[in-house]
Image 1 (cartoon, rainbow, N blue to C red):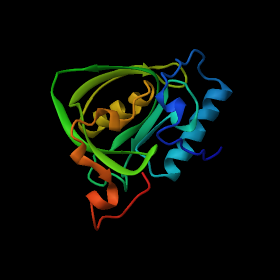
Image 2: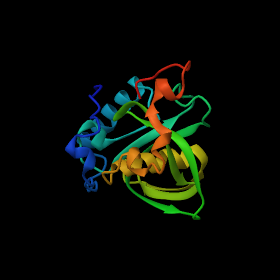
Image 3: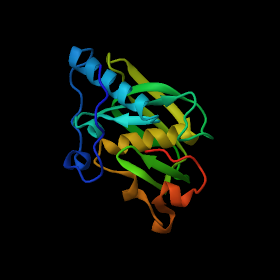
Image 4: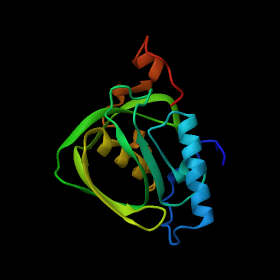
Length: 177
C-alpha cells in the first residue's frame, strides 16, 4: 500500500475523539490498516493510531518482536484493535519513558496503569479480550490515548523529565520518534 506522513502535535485531528468503526472487513478498512502497518514499519514504531495519519477512526495497531526505539522492551504481539475499551485492573501505576511518532525527537516520563484488560475487535469484527502488564500495557494505553485526542505530553506529571532524546540520552542512537 503506502507509507503515509505522520501528523505532528498541533494538528487538530490529533486532538479530536475518533469515531468508532461501524463496518468491518471492508476494502477501505483493510487498506487503512495496511497503510498504517507500512507507515509504522518504516519508522520503527511500536504502535500507530489512525488519527496519526489523519484518519479519525478508532483503529490502532501495535506490536513488535524487537524494536530499535525500545531495545529493552519485551516482545508485544502484533495486534489490530478497533473500538477499544481499557479497564485498569488496579490503581497501581508505573512511570516509564515514552516517545511518539507525532512528537518526534522527544521523550517524557509518563505514568501508566501497570495492569489492564483491553477489549475490542479486529478488522474482521472478531472479539479481542486480553489482560496485559508491563510494556504491552503501556503501548496499548499510549495508542488508545490517541483515539481520545490525548498525546503523551498531556500525561506527564514532572516536566523536568521531558525533553529532546539526544539531550536526555546522550551517546545513544537518535531515532526520529
